[in-house]
Length: 141
Image (cartoon, rainbow, N blue to C red):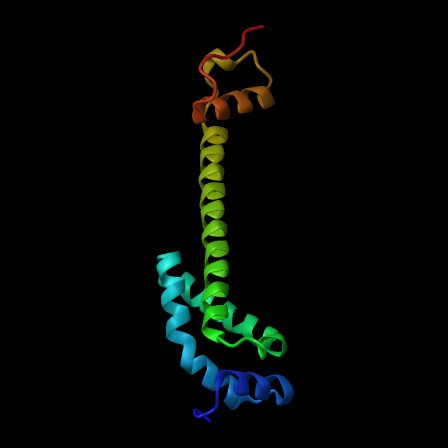
């Protein structure tokens, strides 16, 4: 099986769903994909997730990829794209968690005496703005 070209293995997988052909492709390129994912994600668990996603994309795209002369280029580009998406999602998730934590702190804190006359919604928005440094003074009635 290992003497076949990437294109032959892809064709074999696309036409017959040959597990040995796909397994051979994974063995050939798993290190390349994982190391590229790890360079971008900087996290072993995220890199493993990206690697799995790349090979899932390969399985789904195999019929179209039989025309590619260099499979490693497609795998590398797909790895970069998926890893960048994972990193962006992870950053967004951490920001949302941080914002939720700040909001929980604000909601659980006793109201500031200077804000007592404000509606609870406006007080919450004012405190959130103040916490983010966007607002330095609170409006008075």
